[in-house]
Length: 291
Ligand code: PSU
Ligand code: MN
Image (cartoon, rainbow, N blue to C red):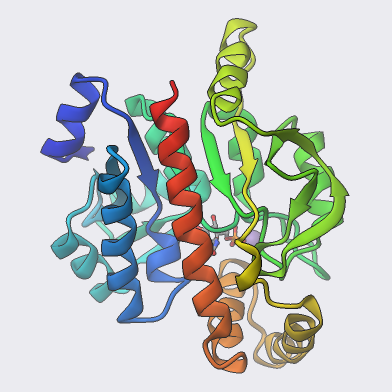
């Protein structure tokens, strides 16, 4: 495992660090926007007086704190999308791999990072049995994960039930309802916090009572970037048929759906995806600084 000099120094100096994943870059966003978004997100972290730590795997080596050159190298090498389970495999096989929420949270936690920002976590898919490793990981790993709830392509009710079953505390940041990615809010009630510092405080209470697990901070997308669910539902129907026809399953489902949504919405979902990522990174910085 390699930690960049910047991240190493930040860990030593106890500076606030925000972890970022590489799957959203390599598999969730189109090229070349993904490179620009990487730079933008890192800049937001620096502007907010924190240190970014983007995580990925280069030729079998876990890297914490990828540089722009390394992100480009990763994306150009057709990285496998890996959750926690696949980490030892890609390490032993010297492969390039992009980390998802589960593997990014796991890796971050073992080096002492406790805040991580992403777009939306994986959860319970609609239709065929398909549940993301993300939820299981969040039930074991001590991390604060900031996201805009879960992707609209999932089964929201089942995802929330699964989060409860696996004892993942979901806190709505200035919202009473669980957000659904770019579709705004669902009608599902969650626990609300209005002050940033209440989030690290809750996290510390978990540690005090020796409760392992993450807090999922649900941060709604800024309202002027909401895409009505009627629009995305229409696209999702089309995409689900394509998935069936092309027999796309498992870990390929999410990247395919996200890519097709961008195409079908003429880039609208991409714009909203970028906005919510930026918004989540900003909140993650505030949380990291309030420890
Ligand atoms: N959210 C996004 N784009 C993404 C993902 C989440 O806006 O690409 C990725 C994350 O890395 C998440 C993964 O952990 O999708 C979940 O994939 P799966 O459903 O196959 O577990
Ligand atoms: Mn899956």
